[in-house]
Length: 404
Ligand SMILES: [Zn+2]
Image (tube, rainbow, N blue to C red; front, side, top):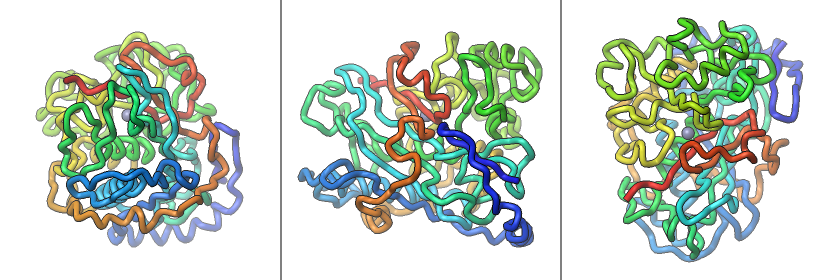
């Protein structure tokens, strides 16, 4: 019997077994899996966030004339871009909100995102292992639970006329060319949604405990070179130590071959790619990202300034490797790393985000709850935020202000 969990508790899914037939059929037709249809659900109230009617001049690739329209257009482009890399026969529902997250003159909480739920023991799953809901749906070949699969929350205050990050704004253009200190929303949102697809650890890094006692599929690929084994084989104390075993925690997925890792430096050890494991741990950032020194830069490095020159119009890079290892099917001949921009959607300003958006909708049983599988912040490195320490089910990342 399948079960799923959110920070709210455990839910038994009683009808998963009868979907076994559908899953078996999926295996037979796995080669025909279609591009993922990633749908942005507008979770904001009228006049706020994605519905913000503040006028804005169009920016490259984004013809929106209001803040809300530009946000929706940019998100639609991100949805199309990710949908051009991964396959799923089940639409991926992403509930997006904008909130007044913390913002100071030098650092800010830019965004938070994560799976809405983790699911285990559905047809096609490894037994006793949690999967992000969107991935579980894709493997299962049918929706396991209703409601959004991913939630993402972005800091609306960046667009306010104040001193938030010294006056920097979100940049909603699609050309990877934010002016001045403005922050690239498209690459930020892509990074966040990839966390929601399962690129994240859910272990309590303060105690080493697995979320609700089960590893996630992501955590099965975390190897500690000191302990010479993967995280599921460690006890809680060992895992807690491993989380801060800087330089010795690597991604052990099969896609990272020596040929792949040879393309990188400063963030590698031997033929392995390091995960971000600073000592002391940085909940929300540690383990759920590549080592910040990775060269050349990768989208899933933890800080904006660590990956500032990444242009996702060339593909999602090493993120494709991890997604593949987790169980996502790659489409359009996307490889590992994904550095082929041929199938990247054109930034023609007609991305379907606004068309998919469901104004005022997005209820979801976790809506409005800070424990909903989202969490994250962007504090300075090494300055954990106690508010977020309590959020164990997080696919979070911290961003620092992009260095001038
Ligand atoms: Zn992140």
